[in-house]
Length: 380
Image 1 (cartoon, rainbow, N blue to C red):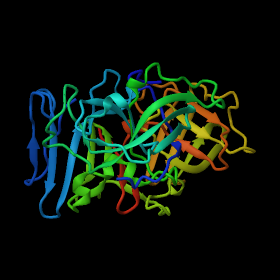
Image 2: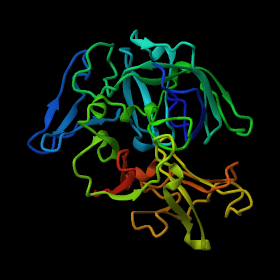
Image 3: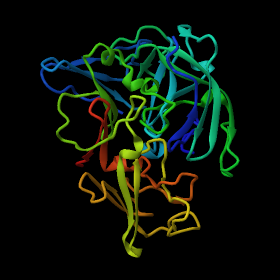
Image 4: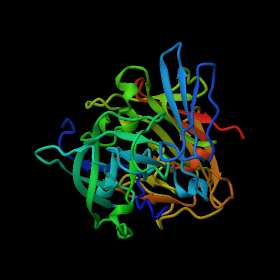
C-alpha cells in the first residue's frame, strides 16, 4: 500500500448497500471574473495553504481549484485532500477514481451528522486487494479541501456538499480470494473519497461528494472534475470550456450514473504482438497497473508481473487517438508504473487499469452532465 495513513488501495469496488435516499501551491485565477480566497488560522485554510474559486460570470459556471496535500514522493504516495464531515475536524482522504463512496471512521465525524432510522448498514469491497469494509451510512455535509489544522467551524471559500451519504467504517476484513490482502492496523486511519462512476449499480451518484456540491444543486456549477498532477490539484466543477481535452462518450446507466464498461481502452505489448481491449479504468487509488484478463483467455505473463525492460502501451480508445501512454517498465519516467500485474478475475470482461501514474502524462476529466471522460496531454 502506498500510504499507511490511508490504508486503502482501490481499483474499483463492489458494494452492497440499502437505498441512499435517506434523509504544493495554489493556482492563479483565470480570467477577469475570478475570485481568490485565502484565509488563515483555524478557518478553512492554514496560513500556508491557498485555494482558488474560479467564477465564469458570463456562463454561470463556478469551479473550485483545491491543491492536493503535499507529499514527498508525489504520485507514488497517492493524491489526497483533507475534508470536514458534519462540521468535524480535518480528516485526510485519498482521491480514488476507481471507487464510488466516501468512507471514513467514526472519529472523523462532527456533531452535525444525521443517522437514518432504521439504520443503513453497508459492505464495500475493493477489488484490487480484497479489503472489505463494513459499517453504517450516515448523512452529512462535507467540506472539501480544509487545512490539516482545521478544527471545525466556517469553511468559507471551499466546495461544500449538500447532505449526502457517508459510509462510516466499523470493521475491516479480507476476502479469502486475495491472499495478499492486509487489514489496516487502525480504522482511524481509513479515508477514501471515491469519485468514480458506474462500477456498481447499487451505488448512485449521490455518493460522489464532487457531484453533490451546493453549486451543482443550485445550477451554477457544471458537475464534474479535473484531476491533475501539474500542479497537483483537483478542480471541482468544470470550467465553461474544456476544448483542450480530447473526450470519449459514455453510455448512461439505469441508476442515473454512467456505465464504467462503456469506456473503451486497450493494453499492448509490442515486443510479443499481444494486446487486450476492454474497459479502461484510470484509477488514482492504485499506484501500479492491473490488467484483468477474462477466464479462458491467455495472459502473456502467468507468473503475475511484467518484467522490467518491456514496453507497454495504454490506449484510449483502441486506436489511441484520445490517449496513448507508452512506457518501458523499470524506467525512471514519472508515468511508468512500478509494476504491471496480470490477473484472471471472476469477471468475464477485460479491464485495463492504468493506475495513477498516467497522470504524469495526462490530466483526467470527468463530465457528469455530458457523460464524457477526457484526457489532456501534459506539456512540461
